[in-house]
Length: 321
Image (cartoon, rainbow, N blue to C red; front, top):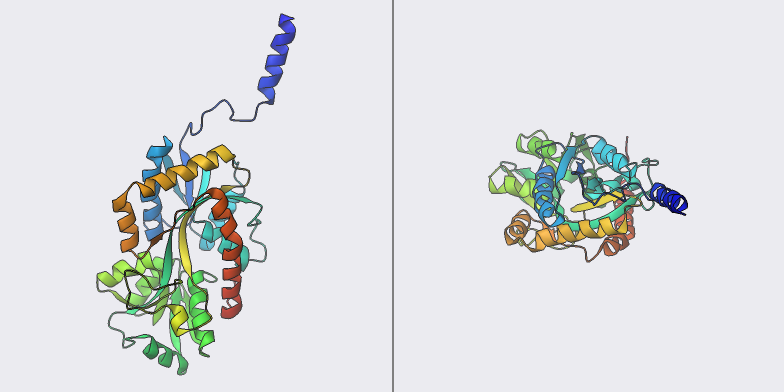
């Protein structure tokens, strides 16, 4: 009987799920960030993950995988082992490519586990401070004149590209798109006069306006920004164009254990709720804290996000080259 009991014990141990004997997190969690090190979104990811590490009782290691507008990072997480040790910062990046790419290499609804949404930053239209384009009526008038305006973006098929293309299409104008290797580079191109305007996420452009490098003429959120109450929204100047925003959020590969997902959600929620200075810093850069009530609530919002981007693609006519 003792030999039989021992064999049963060995068989049970062998059948246990991989990692079941390891308390999670038993080692650093890899957070893949689809932006270059030093980019505004990368800085934000490092700040928030550092805060979340405390309540989680673990550590995060940031891995920057820039390239292809974030597609490389999204694919890496979609194919990762769902053990809680590989996550993606910015679920909106994965959603964007699911809409823009005919075959992004993953299914947005089957290959990811939404964990939490933390904050949202609207895109903003910025021009050089010395630009003669002082307001949106002036910019729209210039855009209608031939040969139109040059506009930058962080890459072909990015939301910033689609926002500008949709604006021009809506007013019956054309422009020349100049893609760069990221939103920071596109904003720098505005500052240096290489392009007439560009859409950039508020946490990139707002500090540059405060430093006197650019001037923001409109914002692309669903409502006017608290930090810029006098600046009109994109929908006000080009009715019908859907909001264009970037989200600070966390997703994992499909099959992430529910217990791990719940702990991650709680860690990020508690980190942001418990740090007034962090919330103030997010809002000072035009962000709106929108902590998900639960992982399920975040997942439930994805279909609407996909539809919003599909509408933006349809209106803009933007395609991935």
